[in-house]
Image (cartoon, rainbow, N blue to C red; front, side):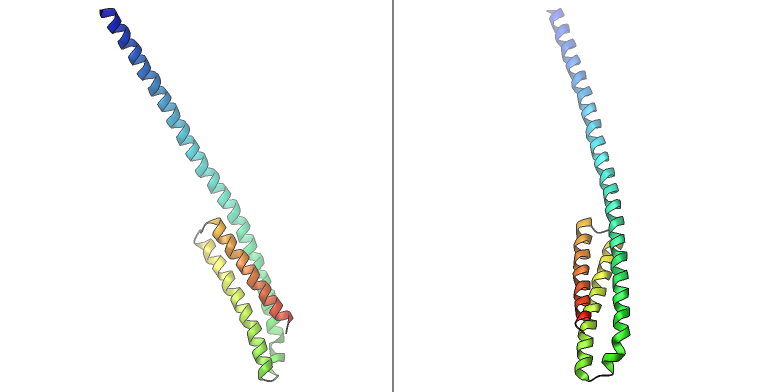
Length: 139
C-alpha cells in the first residue's frame, strides 16, 4: 500500500512538472507572438507613414503650382466686370478648399492617426485638388 501511494505521488508530481513546463513554453510563445505583432505593425505603420508623407509633399507641390497659376490670371479677371470677378472668386474658393483638405492630411499625419484614416484624407485632398484644377481650366 505504501509503494502504491509513493508511485501515485511520483506520477502526480511528474504530471504537474510536465504541465508547468508546457504552460511556461506556451506563455513564452504567446509573448513572442505579441511582441512580433507589435514590432511588425510599427514597421508597417512607419513605411505607410513615409509613403503618406511623400503623397502629402506631392499634394503641396501641386497646390503651389495651381496657386501660382491662379495668381497669374488674377489681374485679368479683376480688371473685368463683376461677373468675371465672381467667376474667379468661385474658382479660387475651390483652391481654398483643396488647401484646407491638404492641411487636414498634414494634421492627421502630425497626430499619428491610423493609416487608413490618413489615406482617406489623402484621397479627399486629391479630389479637391482636381476640382480646383477643373475650376481653373474653366476660367
